Length: 477
Image 1 (cartoon, rainbow, N blue to C red):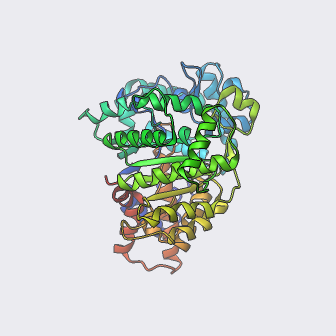
Image 2 (cartoon, helix red, strand yellow):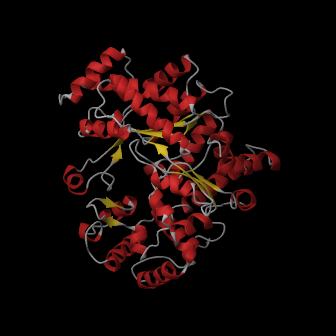
Image 3 (cartoon, helix red, strand yellow):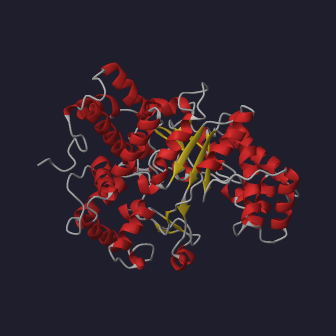
């Protein structure tokens, strides 16, 4: 019987172990998409206890922030909400999570949690209801006394070279500017342009948001679609000056419905007057924005990320009580490969298609994305169009393996830009280690099966590339 989570965790053969320990283990991390707070990085936040770091909860403004992966696990174990996002004492909340965790056999949360305890707190046991007090005391003592367990300390000891946060176009980026001007922060921290609220013309709050966007560019209002495009252009250019290397579009699905700007302007005026727009009208407006922004991304060498196929807030009662990103989302099944190809094709007509990473929350889209990639690659950079890593519900062993197998079958796995955390936690860098072990085990298995030669030079390039070097090149680090 193999020991639980030993140094060869997930590595099932000597070949896999060699690839990981020789080439992957010590590589820097490029965490090009996450939801960390730049303010917490700059201020070097110190956490009072492990519950704050893991579970979060209600914020001073009344919203909720934390790891909704853990919240979902606790709900699935029948834990009352008052221990999850409620106001129960942190020690009691931690106990409920510890009691739920052993039931999660086969869930990546079990691995992530114990990896974090081992990596950052030196705990070699396993977390459960019986060990909760021991772990609580150990972690909290270290959080209070170990300078390596602050926000910056965790980044430094994790060997993180780049962090791409997720930022709204109206953000002042004041904390990014402070980070940029602080020579004691060695990790590069760049904002990522996330214009969802300006794209989602059909969703509540659009009119109010456009007033905020206008204010961010010194205007009283954005009177027409040309004003909207100019405002987004101005804000992106500001982001680029502040070190932006990527944009991110979180879409229910990727639309494509061409229209003249005159048509789009009429739709915009309708929405700004408070009238409901149809699905077709919304798609025309969204398409115009995506085309415009895609061309700008290419001009400024900004990577366009497309995240889609999430059905959000499906538990309407709980979503209304707690708000978005609190664990009530699911995989959607919209098929929009044709729309994605039409968008890239339109941008490619004028040689203005940017580097693009495509993520679908539905793993059934893997092969579709894999075939789409090859239709739009060129010599700008190897792997210009990327199949994004296993995202959200797919960043578990099977999901990661399936994404990499699909990419290998239909494209070039060796040019893959690798893993990201997509997380709000400073402990989540162990997900990169988890991914690297799974990746080395997959590649090692192919070598052991005689499906790829035991070519040390080629294998080193592939493994180091997927771990860091490809992303370094792709994001111009």
